[in-house]
Image (cartoon, rainbow, N blue to C red; front, side, top):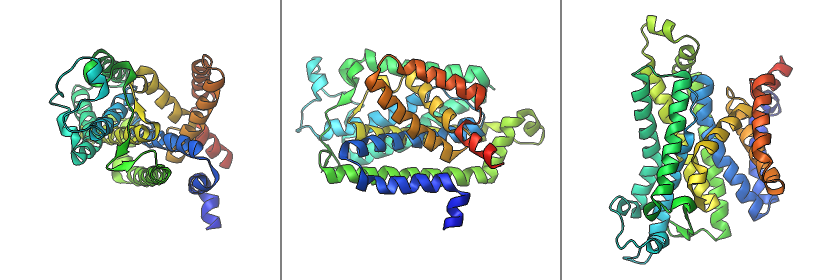
Length: 338
């Protein structure tokens, strides 16, 4: 066990810290850590997509929002008496529930939407881009435009989306009261379990033939075409997996934070998601998890004390990482070991 921890120190250290957290932290601090672990699930998808696939997506906030809004819509409907409308619909003068809201009253449909909607949307988008051989900077700009369009739609359709305020005021999840401390701890353990499964799954995927071919296409797409490999299916699957993890991350984050709004899914949050991975190391799943949690804690501390300073520090941090530590903190650790 000691030898294993010496060779694979960071993942085991993170796991031990996460296991001990519920016994050492207050309820507020534990909830904060759970939010950051939920964000780390999204970061794992970017390790696969950006680090090993060479596909930079600046629109992961879109898929994060799809998962978050899917579970939030269910909770808004589940807390209502029969025939009632969500509070923001009443305030805007609506008299009937929109037809596309109605299926989310079903827990099974909401769960399927959280798991499948972001993945399918991501896979279809990647297929439409890759088949036209759109990549590089153009691909990144288009994903950024999608995140902007999604946030703009949410703000402009206040009567059916909650507008800029988003969806909040949740009371229960599948019959469990969210205010119950035991439920909060249960959600923490669920988030930790899903983060561990995501880490194991991404590591296994990167070590498989799929991961090898994905990296080869990143380094030499034309050469792989000459060898008879079509990059489109591989990149479509990678983007779909990253979108799936982003949607799952959004749903878990919404459960812990108690709110989902356009401010969490637009252009700026999507860029921040990329920076989280860049700081930790876009080639390392463990590094991405550590970087995400560390930067999120720094953001919480600095933005609380100096609200106007955080974005400048974030930009400076990204520039410093790109110029001085292109491999992130994980790359620095690898260099020291070498």
